[in-house]
Length: 270
Image 1: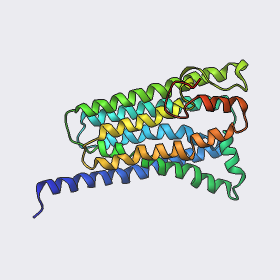
Image 2 (image 1 turned 120 degrees about the vertical axis):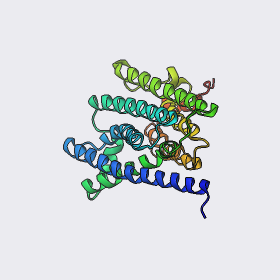
Image 3 (image 1 turned 135 degrees about the vertical axis):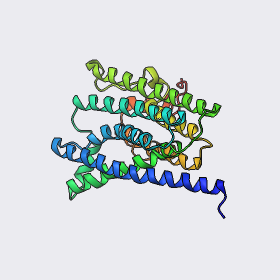
Image 4 (image 1 turned 180 degrees about the vertical axis):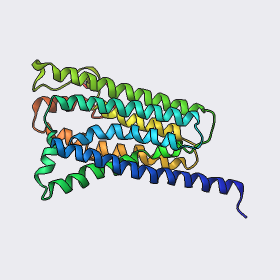
């Protein structure tokens, strides 16, 4: 005979799996449409716009699919939509004023089958990472708790700090680049005085904040997959390492590196 608690746990895991299956289909269709859009305009960096907006689409779809609309689920979906929409708009505006990102141009140079490899290596791979990072969303959407605990509020505060760092640093950098007198110079003011990548610090902080919101939900350890994935990607793969490589040999940037923290905002060294 199956106990009530065991049945409930199996039911919740089944709901998470259902959400995941639905999300896989949504992400596949979503990223395929963006791939077709990229083919038309011949720039694969449009995937960066699709990235943030994709999380907003997933959060709304999961919220619509949830059986019980609890405060934790509504708040999480709202935070993800705010983050994803702002990021997508920011990148889209940046694309209007610039050619395709050099990282994507260089990537294409070594491809034998550009269209197929763009679909698989850029859009589908990004879709996989989108699903992994969304792990805390799937967990939270299946939490039937009707009230918010103190640690949920801590998670919301961590997200708010991260959103401040990412949005403000993006704005500061955009203003800096827009000033033609700064061409060729290194951004070392504002939040960039305390971290070489305050926007990345903000993005990672937001996802760890959402993980904290997911604490003690059923199967909450699975939620750690999301922030762990984005942390590894930004700190070790496609984020900071690729951007820092661009400035290798730049004397001004090397001086900036010695004085400024790479990630965590800290007072600059004298």
